[in-house]
Length: 244
Image (cartoon, helix red, strand yellow):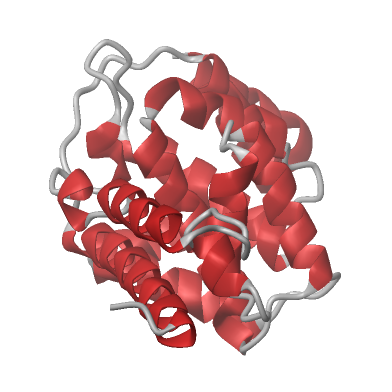
């Protein structure tokens, strides 16, 4: 397969970092035929199947971009990613994957555009929203999302073809501003009570955990967290307005 050829070629010329980069780039070109179950890989279309390693390495590469966005590698953020992968795939498999992650972190040539093109080809929109939530979770692991991290995630969101309102909605779950509740519901503060209720119904349906029943528990948990943020935003607006 192309990805293995690229990995070998990269290793020959640039040793392990070249091998890692070659594998990632090769994965974008390779049309894999191995069917998988579980984790994010279970949301891939049946006609475009990939191995778990393909997706895990690409997801880790996006994680590395966010972690390095503010010019430093934060151990708390690294631990967040490790914990997430252990919960999703088990300790043994996560540790094996993370042997490569250290090299990905050191690599400065990871292309978010190429990785997102690959992910777009193999995932559904609700799953890409979950990836975006995961990336914000990484940035927020140390207690705050920096401007540099938010900007990098916004670029990734564009590459993942996530519309701006959905991006702002998920971002508002981590940035608690004066109008964050309205942003989560994707409406303006001038919206009528009827529009608020309608927006809540739409957002609750969009982020309902049942949409990710085909995925592992860790991802359903992430969907539940988004759903709860929508509920909290609605409750806050109702309280502020005295709505019944």
